Image (cartoon, rainbow, N blue to C red; front, side):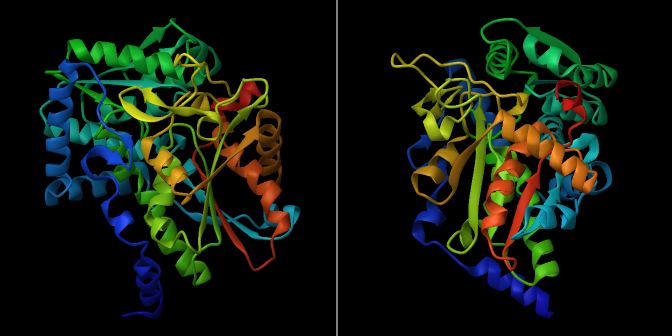
Length: 408
């Protein structure tokens, strides 16, 4: 065995014990997760669970998925040493996992290609999805076009206005964009409408959920499709540095990009600090934020038990963020579990701090990050100067900022 391969094997061998081995079974992460949906959807979710775990082990399915991830999505994505950014901030060396270089500019395509391929295997004819920032909608429209399937995307009217370029892209690829004008007119309401529609069409329609939220098996399935981010990252940093990083930092809305990069490092969480960064919006006291894990309460939302933003009567409160992708009052149940166990630390960043980081990376590296990713970068801007120069930070750059330029 080569020297680097031995190092990687050793890095993967660290283990947190029985608790780690058992979590995530039967749709629960500790007390979080589950299936809390109308009875009519239970059979559809059971069908999905059965087929997902069947095809997850199917050699042909895995080969097809690997083919499309390489030749369509553009994997593996680079792990890039941001030298100028590192020098500007001082302290630790900063690496960027370049998910912004995926086809269509974000990590979302990893999940949609996997799910639409699964939908085709299941014999479904129609695809539906929800979207906030538009990246999941664009990625779903692309996957549906790739596999020649009809597609509807539900999107809040507020998000349609602030992410108009993504709306154009979805329509160009043949998707029908359904405007949602109820409630806060954002991602929360788009999910509600998509679920209502799915109830009436479960026999021939597949719902491509965009994050590690919702009822089982979605949190597990979406994580599994996104975990390629962390697997690549672990191998790449071992090749480059010969060791694991000291920190991995990613933004958290629903939580798919973050769990994707964190998951392969959970076994190493005693030595690798994992930090998820939520949307602080205009400040916690203003109540205009999306810091669900930091300032939410336990409750049931969109089919699962997790942390949610809610009032004293259990009514869901409106989330806020300059970033449409973090403007969500819930979070994936696996993140809730990781918070409870202290395995991952969750912080928040204000809109103003994210905007500053957006500008800093653009100037320093010629890389324009998405507002979502800018939250993680802003946290790094606080952390890196306090660390020694031998420390290594990896930031999951989950998407590019084309969609956000008009809103800066």
